[in-house]
Length: 250
Image (cartoon, rainbow, N blue to C red; front, side, top):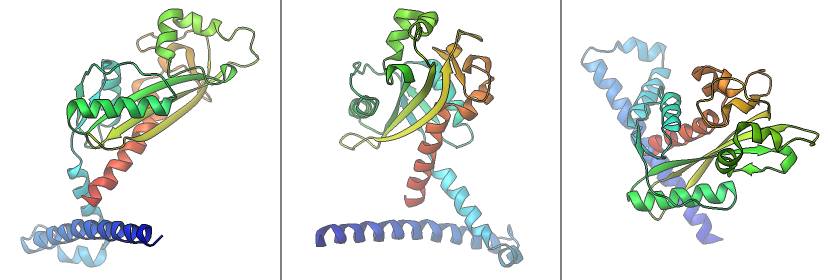
């Protein structure tokens, strides 16, 4: 117990120390601007939150590029669009990572772990699952194979005779800081139902997944409309929040 408490105490001290350094750097910058005449000192008296604003700007500038390991150009395009305002540059790398089996979490972690080892550096990977309530979560992470063998109409046929067509889309991003580190998962979920294909068929199973409360399939939505409510967008929100905390502590 003493060892655990000591470890926790050291970790807390380290976080406070790193945060203090970041804050000191920002305060120094603010006063430098005052000295150079770029900032009116009266603003600091009237708006003390200015230091906090400058700190957020500093954090934004420290976010760096990320290697996204995927061979799917549509995913790369979506991720770049969603992260466009987060000051995170996405670099795409298509690696030969073997297809894995297991739960969504197991697949996501192992895939990211292997990718980081190949790259010898930090990276993110993504796995998408389409889960049917009537089939206890299947096809799940194997939706790509189901879609390839059955097609969009076949996905509907799977649910013939079942009392519900309810489904949910699940996106899992995994982040690895580099070889030998445990990947961290960020999940996003969007609920809906399976319907006959509607909309332009450009991206996987989008035409058969209607989002609850919208009356539209993903394929019938504009890019902005989809990204605002999609499973991928929600997972990326969590990933971005995590990266910002890392930047603050750096």
